[in-house]
Amino acid sequence: MKIVVDVRGQTGSDSLRQYGEQRHSPRYPFEVEVRIYPRNSPVVRGHSVDISESGLAVILRLDLPPGEMVRVEFKVPHGEVEVWAVVKQRTAFRHGLQFLDSGPAKELIHRTCRQLAMEAAANSARNR
Image (cartoon, rainbow, N blue to C red; front, top):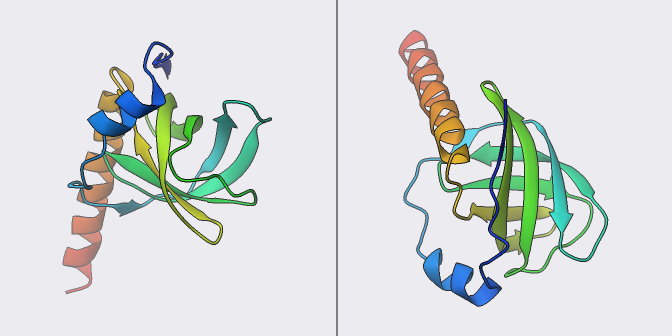
């Protein structure tokens, strides 16, 4: 299953203002191949570091400036996600992406985070 989210009608400043709040979701280690499509550049390939319901941390060889809106594609255990995100921060090659109006993709991301949380809790219980 592939879910596509279209936010072409939004302006960058509207999106940033709407989604500018701080992260409130826990992060989970999550490593998959990621494809980033900046608006005026060819695809940038990288890999994820962690995921939350509100965003994704990725390692990229190319620097993307904070504030840039990008299309992101990656696989989760329950399907493929294609979603728009804004680059919130950059430290060396690590970029923090905040998901924008993820609509139907939000359910796939939520299910993935819920599964990762359960796996983390089970691993923690085993290590006690």
